[in-house]
Length: 110
Length: 119
Picture 1 (cartoon, rainbow over the protein chains, first blue to last red):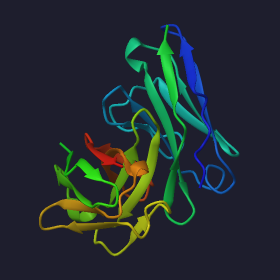
Picture 2: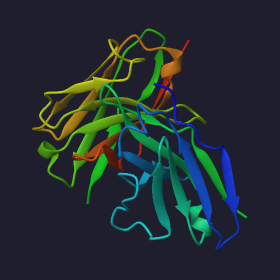
Picture 3: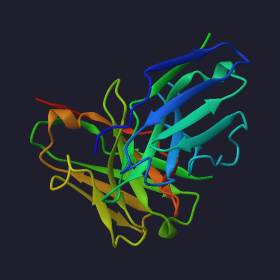
Picture 4: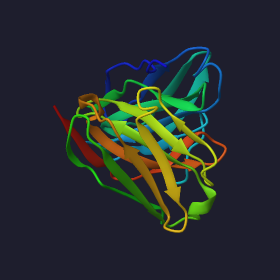
């Protein structure tokens, strides 16, 4: 199972929006609505921010939203804040009861 | 609050073995599956393994199947990852993560434990 494809970097000024894509195949992202997104600050563990494509866990700000079309999922961060500067990873359930992660996107707040 | 604490990492020679532990607290451990995910230094996340809440099902990524064994002791609220025949490419921070039931999601993560395989 190959890693899902994400852009290496994305950036925006405070208050702007940034959207990160996550492209898989018809066997993973396209097959299941089990796409999740994780935020990881340097030296820290990943943190769940979106699950089942577009659901937000309790405590995650509403400026984080997710969507999916075909084999590509997307994460949008609206109203960028300094603390949003981090690495972001998507994940999808895949055949044979495993999971596949995205290649990761480093978001910079300019 | 939910807490997952990994331990057991360290430096081991290629071909050696190591057992990682993941001690859980703050939730009904008997009710949830646990995953292992690893991250090589400066690299992305890679899925490793999963064990169902009662230990009845275990899954592994192809690269570790046959070398790694996941198990759990519900009386100790602990999951283990026995790693044998270690290779340089197994060098990574290993995280355990709680499964969000019926959602194929990792909702809580531990802080990780570093495994370094020296050749």
